Image (cartoon, rainbow, N blue to C red; front, side, top):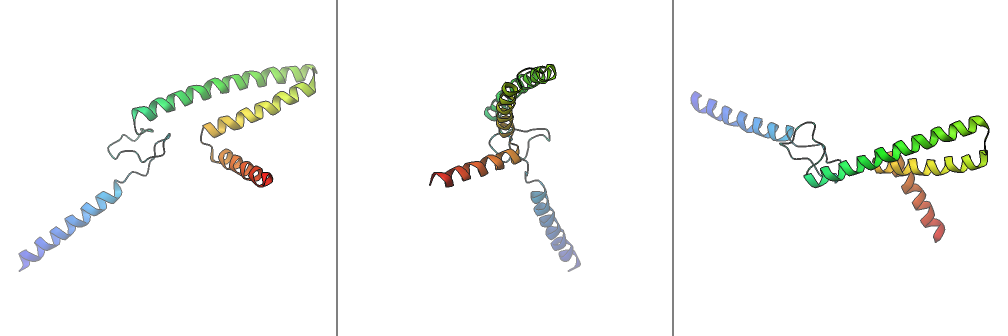
Length: 130
């Protein structure tokens, strides 16, 4: 009878361990592009779920980098022109345009604040159109 209890206990313990193992290995990490859960067997450094998403991520990052470099160069030119006292009104308009471009870059980078701000403005615009 003692042997039967130990077998039952062992069986119960292994079932418990199996359920704990299954719970601990569920993937909470999501693909950076499509937001689907990453496969369980993926490496810790994996950020995308497939080759398609990986290519999409690479293209998005390349676009972001090019836009970032362009924005920084333009900001430097505006700063230098303002220091020299050139046409302030024209440069103010350029800064406003750059602000809009930076907001678009933040949205492309999945910045939650920028996304929520855009949704808020779109909701306001829909209300005004009614």
